[in-house]
Length: 210
Image (cartoon, rainbow, N blue to C red; front, side, top):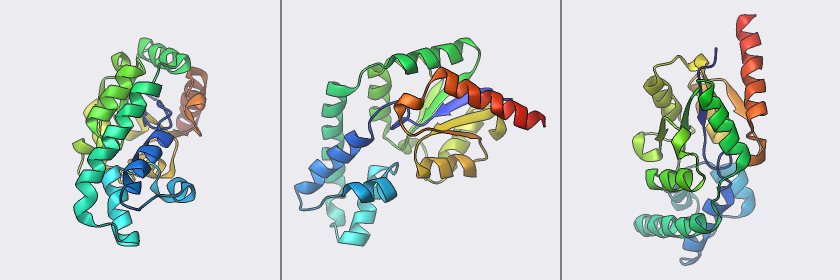
């Protein structure tokens, strides 16, 4: 029986995947580097910025001494985009408010840093429905490692099969599955609706009862 729903943030509750892509590339271009769209979608999507920079150092020779500065610039550029574009979405407010009213416990696990999660959840008017959030600063190993979801499940005091994870990218899906949690895979924020979540919960109830 599902008792909690754990959401990824970027691409699930916030349409921010392109925001991170654009902000990081804006910072990288200052030093002659760039991540193309194909590499973003197939390799980098869903990874924390520090991991992306480490990969660029190994694969393309980005000087490691630039990591800290580029990361700071990227966060600054991301916040500029967030303050302009991050707005409440009715389908998300409705979904989370209904789920919370029906007794489901709600949380967010994101490879973003803590301050970004807090700002985005507040701007999207979703903060009030969440029991807690977990950022890449709260774990040793971010997604695709299962630590983030395993930490959230332990904090909820539930078994993995009692927690539905809503994810949109392969790194997040691998993390959730490795943590032992059932998943609802979505392609974008428009697919995160109350009916879609409840259909998956009901499907899991039938499977678990069989």
